[in-house]
Length: 343
Ligand code: G3I
Image 1: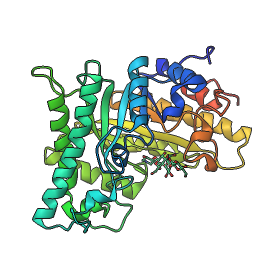
Image 2 (image 1 turned 120 degrees about the vertical axis):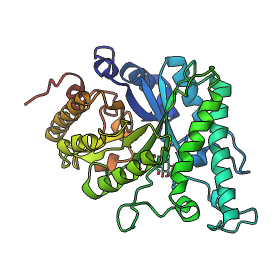
Image 3 (image 1 turned 60 degrees about the vertical axis):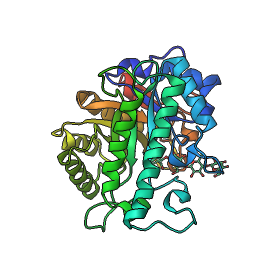
């Protein structure tokens, strides 16, 4: 661990990694703090994580651990995620009697208020326990909405979620407006704007149809002056996806007055995992990070979706990350930092 240059020291933007509290102690923590300067909670800041069984808001104990770990180690926190169709309590979309909310004006008001309260509760807790945003508070960004674009088959290009069914496309605007208000209000410095960058985030944005729908939506949001600051590309890819497609995705959004982020990068090599595949993966990470560096002016950060291979949600598809389970740097590491790879 000690002999290698920290990844973050070689990049012109923050180097992020998704974790849970297993990575906040021991060797994993040592490896993490050497190489990364930003963390994302892989699961414990998702909508359902904030509520106990009595539906009462309380920070998840793991969210607290991650915030404390970040504060103690000078890491930034990229918040994930305020509004999503998945990992959200069912009761969000029910009335007091447990009946599904409809798109009636009264039910819409219930859901708007629920969304607003959810977002404000999170911002207020973070400001109360970790200080003003931008001062001591480690949170620098949030995924405000996640995966709202459809995988095809809808006329407006949007996913048919519960949020959409009840509020229509407006739920996206509202998510950003409430987040903007919440972080501005909890940031106490006189006259200063919130230093929390607000992102939309989605997967398969390196692929044609999805990218068209994503861009069309983001252009509508900008047109309506929704307070969105950034566009996230998850980039869950495999060796079969040309790096040129990642670059094309970034280029596609560069004309907009927004920053971009690589939010969830992982690159599967297939199984069985071979040394040759891992070297090919090294070249993939080298080429991808060359592209990211070339577009540094547009990029807020680049985040890998996990610290070590075995901890990845895609471990079964073959060693998608930068470090192995013995905490050793893979060729992917050398691809990122120095391009020094075997032929
Ligand atoms: O916490 C329970 C544990 O108690 C139980 O023993 C275990 C048994 O399966 O499940 C554990 O929960 C799992 C959780 O991860 C924590 O490991 C859930 O089943 C599992 O569904 C959950 O998966 C997460 C997934 O989001 C859920 O949607 C992955 O870790 C997480 O990497 C993944 O992240 C998403 C991003 O948020 C959005 N973009 C796509 C990305 C990959 O799917």
